[in-house]
Image (tube, rainbow, N blue to C red; front, side):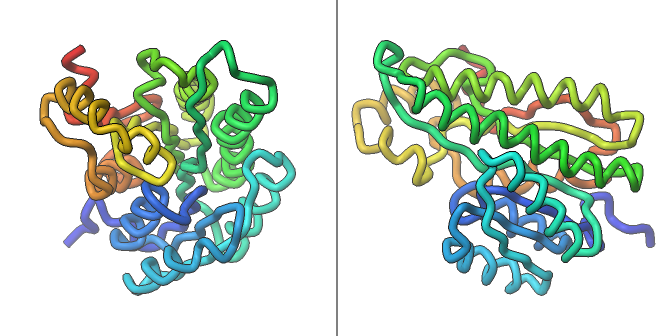
Length: 255
């Protein structure tokens, strides 16, 4: 019997920002599909729970400290992960930063912090991974975009700018690197309750307003991301590149 097209056995993956939330969910999902996984976060100790969850699937896990806003760190850590795992087949750019602030109050420090993490970091991690993948003429990169890649969200201008730019990076790299058989796609999560977005969910009125806009009438759950991530990293998506899949309960389709 041929290998199932969603099987990732033998693949080597890196997931940035994997200490919790969506990053952790994706790391575990890739491991459950058969991949060995390197996970990164700014603080190494924060990766312990993710490491345990990945290893519980029977797959190998490598935990590495990484600041994606540091270009040299992007290259060094991606290279270290690939060397430790014996190669690199998958990169998931999940590390992100967000801060809610009225646009008239945004200062340069906030702008630089968000854009450097979400946009610059994702590009230079992709560049480091792309150099490795080009040598093997194969690879899959998945970027974590956002609903703000498509629509404007008040008080989230730096975040929206970074995620809109990340969608542009996704499309441009897909077009440029197809010759190397590297696929570049993205996922745009809708409204998921995570540590980074918890500030919104403290407002019950906001929750009611948002649920009224989501056709499925519920917020996203971590498991809703897992299947999409595995699909984009697998042979099932062999002819899919340059696209962003919203996982949003129908939000974008209904506005």
